[in-house]
Image (tube, rainbow, N blue to C red):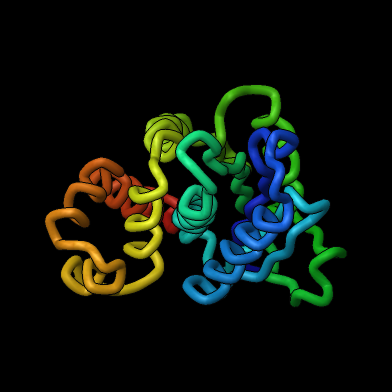
Length: 210
């Protein structure tokens, strides 16, 4: 049995969000994008929580960044930015069908659920939970978490496009109706080179660990 990744997440400060319908649509959109780009299967719970299974465990941290970017992208204003705590659990298992998702179980699901409880006790919004802790990788995740937590709507939008499409920067500029220098500035503000290298390194490391 191969390793899968599971994301368990909940929205930060969801009680302060008035437009619950829009929030639910944003969560659903994020899950749908993970399905389209990574073959993931997931669902939303209780309006502000979600869980997503990733077929290739090595893609799990990228999936978490895509989900957070998608939420930030759909934030209603700079004064009310939407984000999520996401615990990434890795373990042996199979990705359930959507119909059977509610009954899914296994190492990855357990680690992810317990990890979300742990994240809820502190101020971190991204964590990786494995059978054997990886302190060096965890340190890098903390840096990446801090970068993502400070993204603007515009920064999150260009990062999400970069991670879910194969558009060039000029194609992305046309798609968003912006100039290429504007796209470059947004990528720079989002610290895209660091995030790109972090995800490439973490993907390689997870591949060797699982």
